[in-house]
Image (cartoon, rainbow, N blue to C red; front, top):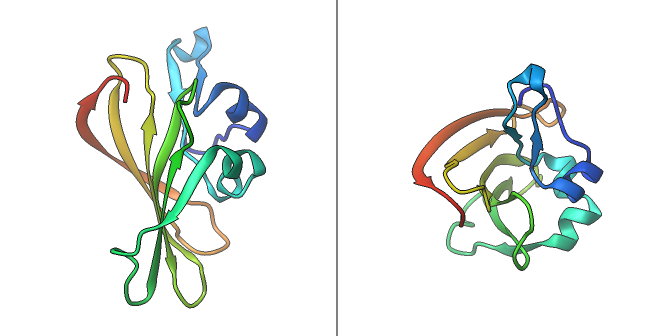
Length: 132
């Protein structure tokens, strides 16, 4: 949800979702990580990071991340693409994991606009649904 973030404490307790209020039409709102979340102790402790050597070529470093074990709540996996010389984020691609049955899975792509600005997001549905 643009302009609204969940605290790391909330993400730790409930995952990358929150229940909507009656005024919001009930249901759930789903979220993705930002760089603050990705460098938090909680995220680093609960996700496995690995270098994607096949895709880390030229001026980029590609790091994959996945939840460790079987998350109890909606979680994320994806890739982080960094500039090799500055380690500035170029793109962050993530997929929501462990969604409730029947919820379509979308793969949002988050691009870094500038090192000091917030990230912008666009979504591409993958055509899959259900729990992973």
